[in-house]
Image (cartoon, rainbow, N blue to C red; front, side):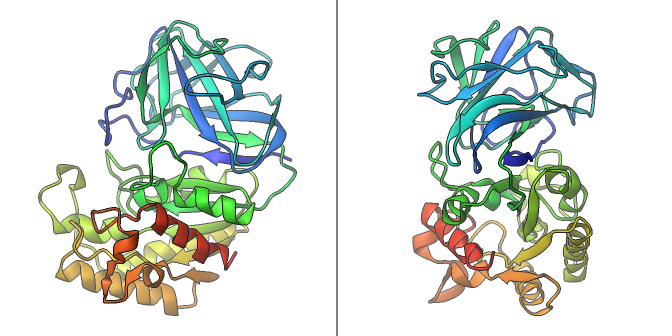
Length: 376
């Protein structure tokens, strides 16, 4: 039985938050990507997405191995990936490809390295903007390169790779569905200190990160992904082995309209709380229809951030009261109260604040994991 051990939600090519290669794509280049597994097994397979491509993408070669330092791979672990028995695959526009499974012993918490070689121009690349870890690019076919010296460019995004699945023999994965707080903004880059990482360490269960920085519950964004009510199936429900969905969405729907300083927030319609509740109910409906237990998270305090204003404060409070008191979720993780400053409950506790009064730091993410672990 295969289960997803790592995921990244795909996004359309864009400038993103940090410099990336999504708009230019790749040609006669290899991309090496490091991902941390939340479940172990003896066999692995990878899932590649061309969700936002307008033409087919040809992957001319691919490999997987256990991660060494930097772009290096542990000697003896590098294994060629095949697709339907072939060493290459064409991914149709808006489609995906899943590799054949190959033998690779990897434990939960261990990282694996996936290398893709593109011998023809890909065009703009479907990607995940905020990886908070390093990916590597080099010229030519480097899929068999163990040392990693040929990779001479770096970025902090993932490209085409959306899942690594392992034969874990279990079906108890927890999918965290949210925005930049789930994605890991504010955590230490390269240290795997996001709250999904912390939750996996606490529970020993596979934990999937289905967050997208800036994501909205009810509106699509050119920069921040498709609306939550539309992407849930692709990013969570179709992943093998998931039995629990944890929802943490809505603060961007509330807060984007509070500032004129960030052009990527636009358009930002002012939403009624009833509309947000309807969106949460739709996620609950979809999750339950797929047989999942669905847990709701209250919004974190965000006073003092660029999302804050009188209207946003009122809407955030009303949405949190509905999540807490309606009984519509199977369980509630009251993250809003757990991370609040006792002296000013509308604000993040200073010990947990990354510095923008919106995102937690590593310590805050540990508290989030502790609260959710207690109700799983």
